[in-house]
Length: 282
Image (tube, rainbow, N blue to C red; front, side, top):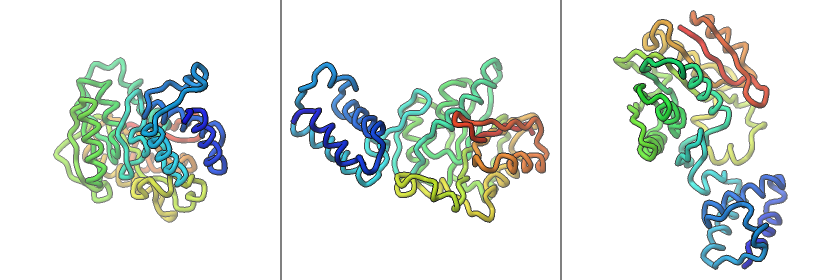
C-alpha cells in the first residue's frame, strides 16, 4: 500500500477524536519510529509504497490511537530535555512544564562549581533526576517514589542514559526518614484536584497512573505540606526547594511556604502563562 493512502486512513479514522495537526503529528512520529522515515518523505516520494509488515505496525498503532492511548505509550518512549525516556502506564508522561522546572534549576546552578546532593521526590520515569545528573555531573542524585513499578522504569532510564542515581522506594506521605541532608530538593507531586478531572483529556484519564496525578478536593496541598515537613530535617539551611504546582493554587503555595518558614519565595509562570512552579530557600 502507498504511504499516502495510509495517511488518509489515519485522518479518516481519527478526525472525530483529534485535531488535524495532531493526527499529522502522530503519523509522522510513527513513520519515523517504525520505518525510519523523515516527515517530509511524502513530499519527495509521493508514491512511496511500504511492505505488509510495515503496514501492520502502523495499523496497530492506529488501533491504539482510536482507544485514546497516548502516542508515547504506543512507541514506548517520550522526549524530555533532549533525552528519549522509556515510559509506560506506570509513570506519568513527562510534560514540557516539567522541563521548564528542570531548566530553572540548571540555570541557578550553572555558575556554581559546588557539588550538590539532590533529591527528587516522586520521580516517576526519572526524567527530573536523570536530566539533572546529565548536566550536574559532580552532584550526587537521589530519587524517591512509592511505586516499585515506576522505579523499575526510572532505573531502566538511568541505565540507558548512564546516570548514577540512588533510588529509594518510600511514601512521601509517611515522612520517610533518611540519614541524609540535601542541598536541593525538587518534586512534581500529585496536584490535580478531583474537580479538575473534567478538564483533562481522555488519554490522560484512561492511561496514566492516577496515583501520580490526583489529590482530593479537600486537601489539595497534602503532598506539599509533607514535603515541607520532610525538608525540616533533610534540607540544609540555605538549601533550595523547587516544586511544580497546580496552576490554580499559586497563592496558596506561597502562603504554605511562608508558614513553614521558607524565604526568597519565587512563583513562576509556565510557557502557557499559568502559575506552575515555585522556588524557596530554607
